[in-house]
Image (tube, rainbow, N blue to C red; front, side):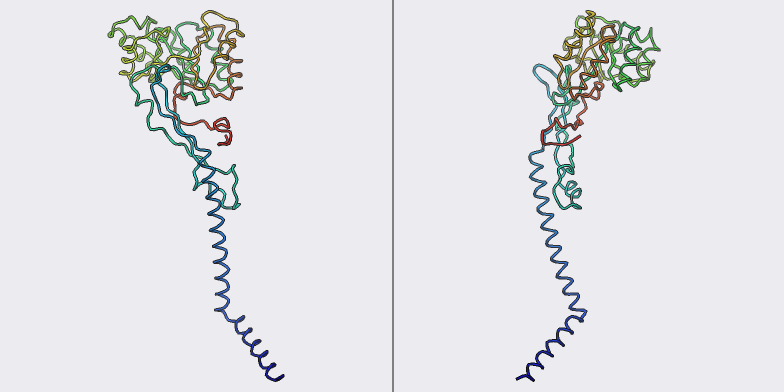
Amino acid sequence: MGKKYLIGISLIAILTIVVVENPLSDQYLTRLKQESLEVSGVSETSDLTRRIREEAKSREIPAKDAMIDTVWKATPGYNGIKVDVEASLNNMKKEKSFNEDKLIYKQVPPEKHLPDLPASPLYRGNPDKPMVSFIINVAWGNEFIPDMLATLKKHQVYATFFLEGRWVKNNPDLAKMIVDAGHEVGNHSYSHPDMKTLHSGKIREEMKKTNEIIEVTTGETVKWFAPPSGSYRDEVVEIAHDMQMRTIMWSVDTVDWQKPQPDVLIDRVMRKMHKGAIVLMHPTASTANSLNSLILQIKGKDLRLGTVSSLVKEERILLDADNSSGPRK
């Protein structure tokens, strides 16, 4: 009995040595380990993908189409936003765990764009876009323009100056100064008439002469038209549209031509401030003395400032305010 037991033990020992030292056995064990790790990795990736997709549903913001509003007329579109699941997964693979700060977002354009809309004036940008535009109508007030330009430069703010053609002809250096400072320029008629009362031929002449003098003087091609005193009829808007210009109005008025004190002007503007606002002003002492505080207060509301062209762009501005649980800056 003892002899058989010893023989059995010896055989087991020999077999163990053979199995352990067998290279085929080593490969088999290694393969088993790899398959186990791969299964574990697939499971982790699957769980992470599922979590990202769940988060993506709550963070998606649909795009807004450009439209003709019954009150505000032409309204530009605004990009939506959604989580890029694949890019977010790749961004989190190293940690193998969900991290909301590593979510990657992509913008989704609307189906209908501003150029798709018929001729219609534009009083504001998209009401969801946290941006404001200053429009500065210039037919006089030369003495205040340098100070206003200096204040805008100090805050790195760019505005859209609507220039009267006759003014450009008489003040080419100031017109070039405005453009050289990086600001946008638009058409404010040639002789500041009441556009609503003009016949169609005269309307075209006013616009054409102004576009030509602005381009000759500054090199800029105009794409925006602001009627003097905001006076127009539908035909004025349609003629501007035919000349590749959209008609720009405003949603907030400084009423600076009444020469209000700076605190009155600032209060008037800030009480009506909103996303997508177009703020009308002129080169006046009231505006020049209010501009610095006005810019600071608007920025204090997490609103950016830019030209009309920037305001109507569909590109989304990513701010925390977009969604309480949404994308970061």
